[in-house]
Image 1 (cartoon, rainbow, N blue to C red):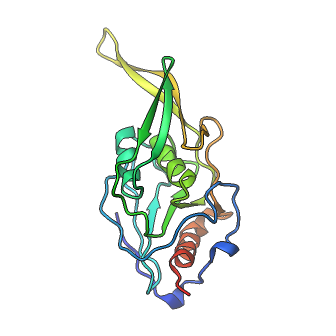
Image 2: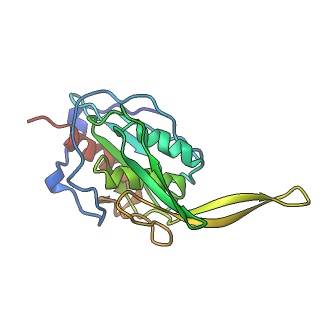
Image 3: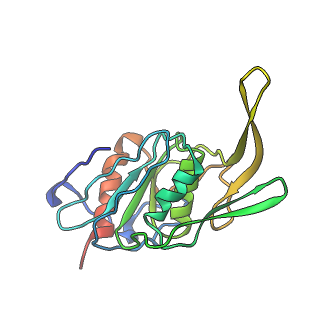
Length: 209
């Protein structure tokens, strides 16, 4: 996890009204604030990288690009750092439905951007979808991979492990990323420019009149 500090002169701020829309559901509804982010756990498959925004604003950037996910519990724990309770996801397995909820007390004020791409999948998509649907973060980048299935490991007689698909995940708004992925709120036409775009969005979120 590495931090990048920028100066206000190095960043062209992008306010919510000027964001290039990417088709996601969270654009324009993420709140702004000025409190520093709290430490939290990240899903396995690559820890999100945090960046600092332009001087005078406090915000957070979760980098989930190329993150293959990991344990669902860790995705819920990460979401809990930015939510004050409420739904994170749900899944249906063997005819029953289970709700996954965030713990109370998360930081709901710090501006938040989540970077995603075609390598963002599984539990990482669950995390991104929860923060997007709850209007807690702005997703920046490109469409995610689209793996929203629940897999259960089964031990084989020879000692191997077979993972069986037994269900499907849904975001708080009832969307399943399986097969379709999640669309970002701010699309990065050029992947190489995604980092700079995320910093500009962060600056817009953290800007004060």
